[in-house]
Image 1 (cartoon, rainbow, N blue to C red):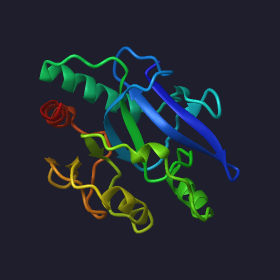
Image 2 (image 1 turned 90 degrees about the horizontal axis):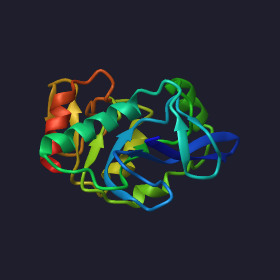
Image 3 (image 1 turned 135 degrees about the horizontal axis):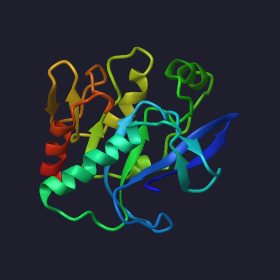
Length: 193
């Protein structure tokens, strides 16, 4: 299994923290090497197999995590580099409350005074892929914490169809991997590895 996370109950809701996409040979009980991160909106349809520990995910139809894994694996191949043992991509979200319906998730998260961030956000990987979608009056306030000390990163600009080699603004449309052409991302990642 290549997909792991730690699910925790928080104020009557389930939150998904420390989501990892392993790229090759791995032992999730070891620290591993974070080779990059992707910033999405919220945990989608993947379900826990256990609570309170880093454990394999039940993808339950989630397409984002396999898409991200496929892009990074292809980038290593294109760069002619071996994937390090225990290499993983960290998944960060604007918030971590689990609900595949974004509108319902936003409604639920708005009822919490201080929803907790993921402790892994303190990591500073050299590759950060922003994929949080477009300008959204509600979600924009969650984006700022990823930008306050972030000068690097990249995103696929939905309007121009191009990779932008910097962190987006809160109003830029940083395209979600679903429905995105693969090769621009693969080629960009290969150049960063």
